[in-house]
Image (cartoon, rainbow, N blue to C red; front, top):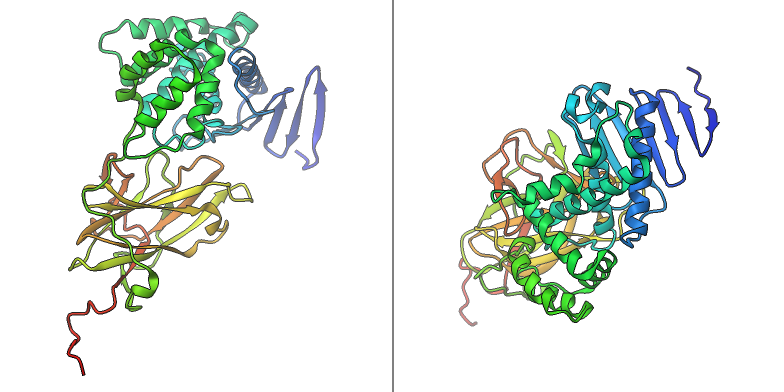
Length: 435
């Protein structure tokens, strides 16, 4: 195949062929694909196109002008679908047969595209959704995705997928059956809570609730009070208060504060004799970006008068050329992963390309004898930081975020280091006799 582009215009779309990569276009959806027949790219593009229109027109969400779907066919990968929260969806399949109808492949692609559209609808408004539980975020996508499936079927009926099947059964009909099960999964119960909210306020009013929540100044240790206040200010209806009483325990994720008292110092109060704490050997064996969790290292230091002054991370940014206009977070935690302090840092601190050590100064903060540094980048397919790790683990590295589950990282030690310093006059080896 020649490297020059071959352009074929057909009706409202066109297909571009360049090397092995092809592009299927609609007015508001673009599918980039390779290793599969165009007929499946068309079906996915039409699904995304219809799902976007339904989310915007029926539910009032500010959707991207164009939803972009990238399909990668790789027999070494597992089947997965995710979104960057803005306008991209990434679908990885092992082989074209993974695109067969669910009765043959076991994979629900129409529902999956609609589910991810639900994520886009929410995340474009509530950019910082770290206060949401997984059941809240996934439950919302399950609820709205199910509703969108119904709308897609209304538009395309049974003619959408190449090997036809009754995908209407994967919409609200399936959700309602799931909700009838007393032992339903947490995501299903979360979807039921969002369904109940929509029945109170109406389909298009949830947008206003999401906007109110996005503007609220939320305390990560106890988000509920502020979220309740913002919710009740959107509409005078006692049913909202009742709904929140039942919804908050499932939908809200708290990052409990440590009982270790937060104490800070000014830099000129320090001895200016920093000490480096680290477990890595300084050589990157590999790297990782962790969606839904973070990179954590547990440190120990004798004495109670040490202050953390900076964190060093070996890594590089990936995604769009320009860094996202948001912060990532460095949390100082106690040994139980409860938050002592939060140090937001701009994404722009990391460059794309070759990894390097990045020094991140923080407000000098007193640390306990055992403490944890958690770093969370909230990565997606188009933004994130690859953090390096060495070849042999010491048992002090974890995948974790404050207040959540933490798991040992056994592949190596994260290349994450800290500097600590003492207050002036706190060196036990010096004499303080007046002369």
